[in-house]
Length: 132
Ligand SMILES: O=C(O)CCC(=O)C(=O)O
Ligand SMILES: [Fe+2]
Image (cartoon, rainbow, N blue to C red):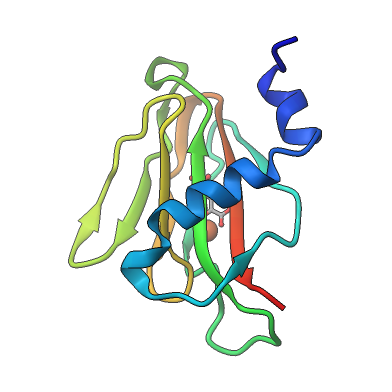
């Protein structure tokens, strides 16, 4: 029986998400990773935003977040504004379509969600941590 996305997330997609992290982690020469918490389902409505931040603060108790994953659940026509913006060597707007995922280092890549102007923007966010 096919699972809906919601069921899949709730019922243990952890190994799928870990697979996504592992598929790209080589480029950053990271230690072994694990997922320690459920993926976070985020809903942004009009005027909602998330200011510039890094997902792993400079000072924090271990285990450290190493990689951040954002899966876009909404189609571009579902909302306006609400761009995910990453500060790498300049501001990058990946322009995610529904089903697209982006993974970036949690410690170094500042990012924000610009204010949503209209509609509803839904994402799944998940982090890979240093394995214990
Ligand atoms: O929803 C997004 O695109 C990213 C949200 C975010 O940066 C976070 O939850 O840490
Ligand atoms: Fe973030």
